[in-house]
Image (spheres, helix red, strand yellow):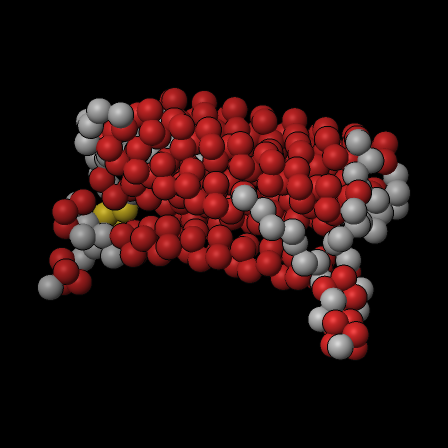
Length: 286
């Protein structure tokens, strides 16, 4: 009987592997409830139903609360309780890679819509791309400036990564400050571009493709900036070491993904998509 008891003793089993068996947590249930309130409240608000806005705000606040306490628990498990072993980190890395792959597919859909409309422009938009009614933005002003800014931020975040590997905390902090400054500058210029744009999202397929692709990229820049800011705070608080900094490393991967997506946006949408309109022969429309 004692042998059988020892065989199924969970504490005994937990010492025979490197996986992290998480404790029971209320956060997944609360996160699901907050998401339900958020979506339902948004739909009710758009249909002008009483109570929709309040449900939407309460759901949003609940989601923010769950994000804070859930990630707080993960930081405690990784930093102070040391549950994130090599095997756990390998699984986290695989999860981050799969997440970035899903993001690639997300942006692929926008590029598909863009090239579907631009390579064979239909008669509804004048059989030309960009459409004749669209006054495009100058590629070599804010878009080119933002390209240099974002590529520079990729260089500074790589500097920070190498610095933390070499256990140079001061250099890591300085490089991250440069990165956060460049990220904020990019976001400012992106907003300035939107304010001064001669067209909007309702201006046909060109406006839809432009604002959906660049707008979601801007949102990803915002999310990446928050991730790097949290990593900066954790590095200042000595939560990361030269061998244990996956949270920071995943933020760096995400930021490089944002850089690469912007290069495709600049080349295809800002530069190639803004070339002089070309007319499609009538025979090709038959």
